[in-house]
Image 1 (cartoon, rainbow, N blue to C red):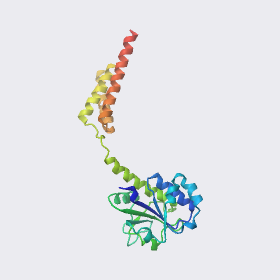
Image 2 (tube, rainbow, N blue to C red):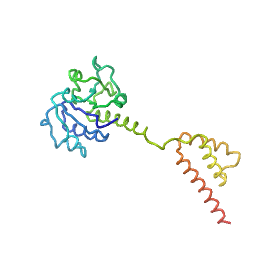
Image 3 (cartoon, rainbow, N blue to C red):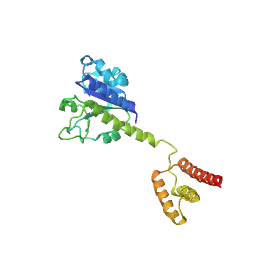
Length: 244
């Protein structure tokens, strides 16, 4: 996933401060392209900058458009955020489902957010070709604009990180056979310092094998554990000899 292909579109937002907070939410998740349907002169730039803090540059580079259609003309997918399904939008996706859907798309993807009071109108939603919904209380389902932006951006960023982590090398866990060697080293050293009597060794090894297998140790971590317990028993022996 290329986060530079993710476009956030705010449609006629009411509050300048909400635009600033939305910029900050975008920056938290490495998403930087903002487009606004509306007139720039309708907003208080100082209020936007105050709420955006260090993300004010996102607003300064934002482009204004007269309609959703024009704001998304270069996008390959245009998803409106809504609680209402529609014939043209099909099944409404959850934020995490949407993030997975766009993961393999080459090209710009727009996420559309409506006005704070009314959300996206039916006419505005008809300009979108997909729908995303954020589950919320039936008694009070309205989300603050910047909170909705944060939730969508967060899920997109999480999907991006998941894909990045797939490519990280050197995190293959040791086999159980290799793990048994580490467990034996731990048990041998604990026995040397008198931590348990021989009848308790089997239970102790079972404990360490179970807990370390769940930890999915890497080779480097297994060696570090072995060195630690070797050092513990060595220091214990040295201290014992000095007391004699």
